[in-house]
Length: 220
Image (cartoon, rainbow, N blue to C red; front, side):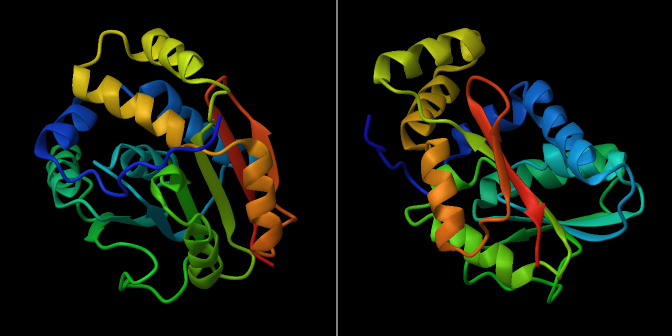
């Protein structure tokens, strides 16, 4: 099945609310646990979360790594509105800074970051090289990088089955977006080719669930 791109930004208020209220505990906690698995339990400095959405991974990452400050970047004001409300509720507004902007043109508070994390952003981008080039630009030498995203199914029918398996009880807007995101996702082979072209061929890749892959490594 060929990739079918979807809109880059989730600007709609209904979309943002559904995403903020949905239960992503399992994949988001898995993301943090995978970072620990591949890079260790200790991390200090400033971390950049690209495509942070309503900040659930920012919050989980801040709890897991108490010596880190986190900058979360997202292009959707609606998503960031829910993210800022979450930070106030969690008492983490002093450690997590949410920023409105899009890569590659976003103005970031730090010139370089001690780690870069990215969850479910790549499939939104019309040109995947934007992500890899941004990571190379903003990450310090030796900085750990973890990217996780959806894995494109082989057929639309398989995509529909995945939606029903994992999001059957979610609002229709979330089920619709999940389906289109699966169709817009990349295969692991495509990701490996992207890394090769970006000069990041030393990054490792693996499939971690029936619908997720990760790419990880340190910036040389």
